[in-house]
Image 1 (cartoon, rainbow, N blue to C red):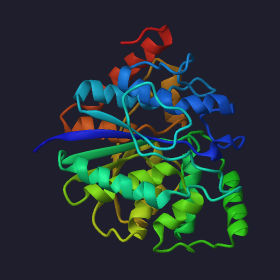
Image 2: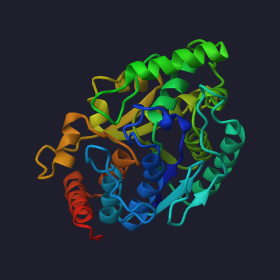
Image 3: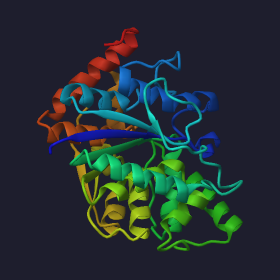
Image 4: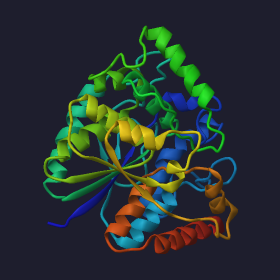
Length: 336
């Protein structure tokens, strides 16, 4: 059948509380609301849990506006999967129970990674009986850092992206160095032990998305919707013995990120990357045209949702225009 589904996996990690690490905000209180806001915006077109707009400290909107626009324009089914978020979203969701990821500088990050993975694998197996295509996105503040740590532990040397134009690469490297010393590991220690890397250094989203993908591959085409965080998921899959095709769809802002190594990491992981050529340079809104300057870049499955809309016959420009309207409505305080 031609049935398709978009899944948004939401999670948190205590890493986001480290100052200057997450572009979601300096304020740990605000970061608590990022995840439910993204899910609610995708589902309802407005945020119910937080009273403030889903903007970063400089006023750039969450990439969820693109995911929402793609969903509205292409009319595909959406499901939210909660796994270890601080707060539940005020919308329907399915849950793979988990605590938020711990800060690996203090203790192992996801003690239950193997159980989460096996439950997610079963869920993927169930869902893929219905779908011939699954697109899986994520919302995890601070998640590029847990992605970096997992990639390093699995032996991949390359910088991940950031939602800020000034990638806090040195801070990420410093956190890796501290973890390395703390746990007495080196780059590649967890070669062929993908879930062990997640258990020590990752976040619950990685275990969930890797499991869902692994459970779906034999029946469905799976598109991992995201940037470097999905490369970490791809690495976990490879190091759990998956040798088949892995596809990632992301925005051009990830591919163009000079501070990161998306293309070379994708090549090392034998990942087929679909890069969506969106253009926001002409936007009337600074919050959107700034995406061209390296703000935000990707998240909430934005690139994958745009790819998906294209796949269903809706051009990128149509989705981008719709996203602009969603942003305008948010700014005016009305919801479409």
